[in-house]
Structures are given as structure tokens and as C-alpha cells.
Amino acid sequence: MPKKTVLGALVVVCITAVILTALYTGSLCDVRYRNQQEDLSIKLAYEVR
Image 1 (tube, rainbow, N blue to C red):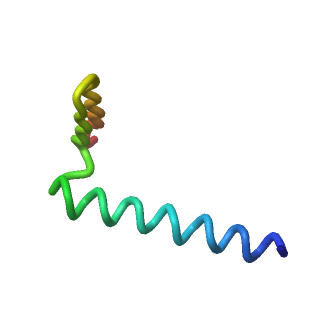
Image 2: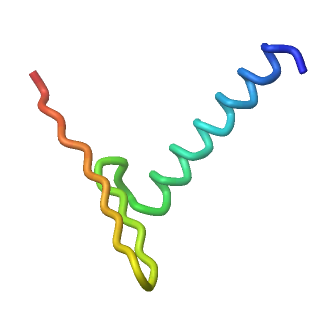
């Protein structure tokens, strides 16, 4: 596969992941995953200057 094709596919996958995360969680700043044994919470903290 040419490098441009691989890079394009990677960009599409990343953009899709960001869009789906925003749709399902309502916010990109707080993502939470739970199953029977684990609870994973990812929070993005930022300041506007």
C-alpha cells in the first residue's frame, strides 16, 4: 500500500473515532467505559487563556 493511502485511512479512522465519541458521550472532555470488572474514566482538563 502506498504511504498516502495508509495515512488517509488513519485520518479517516481518527476522525470517525472523535465524531462517535462526541455523539455517544455528548462531550469530548469526559469519556467513561464500564464493564463488569473495570471502570475507566478519562477526563480532559484545559484552561482558556
